[in-house]
Length: 149
Length: 149
Length: 149
Image 1 (cartoon, chains in turn brown, purple, red):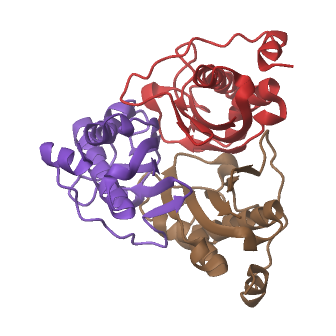
Image 2 (cartoon, chains in turn purple, red, orange):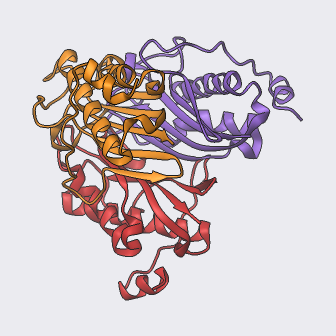
């Protein structure tokens, strides 16, 4: 089954890709690796500290939104998500309260999406960690590296 | 000398590998690179903020424990640590007090171990930095990328 | 035009490279990738939290200084910056106040430099994020991965 068909079955529509507001690019190729820049959840998600201003459920939804934007970027970069061979690495950055502990539950919002959409090719190494702050006060920012053919 | 013999000489026994509690994998291959997920020190080390709740010496020991778990994971992934050609990169993340400054001394706990065990093949690029928070309140989390043959 | 000529036109002199004070190396090769360790701005820049102790303009200057040290390291590693094919990734880490939001403007100090000096080969993916703390209280630390031939 193509990834496009799977997206339809899952009733997922990928969002429009968003251009960076600063001096960087959204994706870069090297060899058969595709690097995606740190990606936020967009403007529909509450800003602030997870564990204080933002709940784990809200942050899970934000991490899923990061993942959707990352998939949209990968589709634009590769032409088709069917070219993805594996998901090498996810760096999940949570803008959290200093004593917050549930980063894995938050970043699962992205990880669950990648596995739903890409199956075993979506399984990845990961760090899910707490940042001191994030641009614009977003609750989550995520970086992904894919291998493609 | 094989790495296994060197481990015996150093009187180091690698720990059992621990499976992730969330939706990710401990290691991933791409080309001749082996990515290891962000790895904590296990449950035998005090949690909390380094520089406040946890001393530099305790955090050094925690970083060494992260390194042991990372070597155990690499051994499982590769069959033998002798296949490691070089250690490309270490990302050392310290759950530190906001004005903590001694991250390099902490992450040396892992770096010293890698060089003890792997010799020149254990030398690596590194960032040793302070996170706002870490999962479960662990004091240190470390990510490593190896090149293998 | 060679990068050396471009540096002269821009009136940029690369600094002396600085050796690490801890157990790591400044750069590492794997395949045709060059990894540069997390790099600070040197001792001429104010330490402390960006958004509280350090202004955005001061931190922009610090990020540019990180970039100059990174280019100096790449030149030493490669012999010539003309061997750089592309800039794969920048991880820009800002030692920021917990509610600081302008990380992209800070890290542009490095990104602008890379594009000035390397042209399109300096364009990169990026995460520009807030750390809880950084070694020695430096305001900015930056990691770069280049592809070379």
